[in-house]
Length: 246
Image (cartoon, rainbow, N blue to C red; front, side):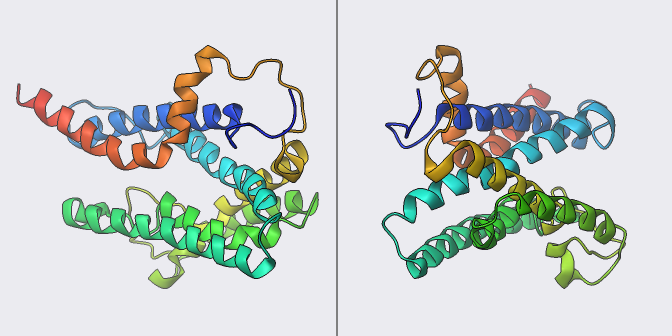
């Protein structure tokens, strides 16, 4: 089966995002249990740290891949100026959601509140990524360069206004920190693979079945990942509170 999905979405992309949703919930549950002293788990290194990196990497890679599909479809009916406005508005909206997270964590977890987390990053990435859509293999090189630059900026201390770039004060701590470098490199990889495997916004490879039954729960989670992102932490914290006071 090739071509455009009837629903406008591709189940394999939603299912991949759904897997990341599951691992996100699992990691945050373990992180919260450790943070509040319910159990002792090392989350800063080892398996759990790698799981956190893999989860974030999946979400961010899929930002680039999904954007190529959306951009290709939108470009058929919108001119260049309208396209810029669309992704500026979308990115600003997601960044605004990030500011909500900043405010909430500042109120309830001021010692490690989120200044520039994954939603802030995705918002900025959605705004600037369309400028890279026109590139092909060059996005692989740009992506590698962004990853390398991230290792450089991570070793540099600097003022707070450069947090978004990956440069931060030596005393900086945050529960979630996803700077443009190196993470934008994964968006560029996603753009490259999106254009390669979903040219012009259509699936460029054959899939024998429309959607496996086993993938449906994951695809559902993937389609509602933003809503789940906001909802899962309050549920986890409420469950921990109830269990610890039972």
